[in-house]
Amino acid sequence: MSKRPVGPRAVGGILSMLNAFNAAPIEPTTRNTELLYYYRDYVAPTFCSVDGGNIPPVFATHCLPWMMNSPLMPNVVVLMASAAQSYSGIIAKAETLHIKSQVLSQVNKYIQNDFHQVANQALRIVIHLVVLELFWGSSDSIWPHMQGIKLMLKLRGGLEAMDDPLNYNVLIVTDYELACAFERELDLQSMETAIAAVLSVGEWLPEPIRSPLLPYPISFQECKDSLNLSQVAAEILDDVRFLTTSITSCFLSPELEQTKTTKIQSTAEWLYKRVEAITELDIVSVTPTSEIIIDTIRLCALVYTSSIKSLTPLSQNFPPELQERFYSNISLVGLKKWKYVPGIFLWILLVATPCSKDDHRGRFLRKQMACTGMTIGMDDFNLGTAGLRAFWLVQRWIVREGLEMTRAGVVAGADADADPGLDAALVS
Image 1 (cartoon, one colour):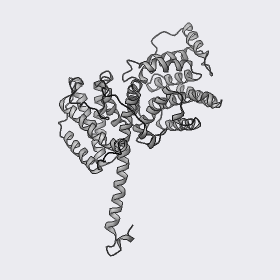
Image 2 (cartoon, helix red, strand yellow):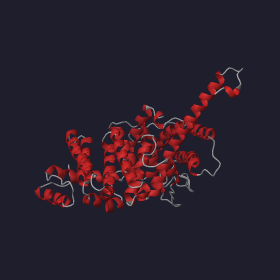
Image 3 (cartoon, helix red, strand yellow):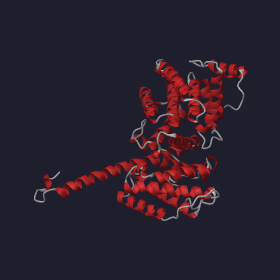
Image 4 (cartoon, one colour):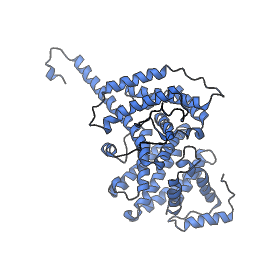
């Protein structure tokens, strides 16, 4: 279960250290020590890493030390480790539910203290409870925690008044990830605040983290060899980038002449037909992973363009047969390969996540999307947030323009049904 044997000395060592700082001491049992080591060795590495193979320096030097010195976070760590083991089938769910009830009681008691003294700690702890539900729990349990965070931020003067830069970044990234995954509005920011945020992205990004969601002076066709992409895959990604930036500029660059919705739909229709015409890859056991990655890009481009051309949510454009192929492709390539193209992989996951359900596959997909987004965000907050914001704006544009089209259709229908002898001014 853990990478090291847990004996009496180990129990006394790590728990004595933690309980010296802990407002709610952890019971000194062998099981709790096993869970702490399991978190350190197996859970923590996956938080901000595509494959769990490497932890970003920020997480290692700032997040982990804070967790160990926090008044309550070690209790949450024990809960997260138990939830991860329950999800993996290592233990029964009853243990996790028991620990969860204890932790929630401790958190509620903790925030009854002078709020201005405990606010930063409380915000960090509750955002981890959000992550726990997103990764291993129930999506319905996410939103009460997010409402709690929203209320705490209001008491502190809003996001802009936060004096905890790292957690500010984590809250922003998580807010976008949840909004993208569940095709909804942001919880912690208004549309106006999100659009107004200045997110400067460097002109010369490392090739692996370049995203089809953001404008960039170098095309994917120009760097296809280093990314191991075919000409066709690179062209698809460049077209996706053009389509995406045509939409996001409607929000982010209002001073420019806006691209008409019908023109964007026509572009999406053209790209959809072009991608649909590509011969579907016959994947067998010896198919190179590079070709499976290309097939996954093709598949996600179909879903993405279908959603944009029809002005309907992504979750309505990912039929079961494509989902099956998608999950198979993700598994066949493996996370150790996907981590070399995190910018492209994040777009792929964002396209697929809205169709996820509260089952094993759905939780895996949401967790992987969140971890990939946080991996980029921990390395470059502006870059990670800008990519997530761009995708979210595409989703919001689809909703907005879809509603406008529906209203226009209703009005047109009313006009068509009106008595032609009536004065037009009286027809509403």
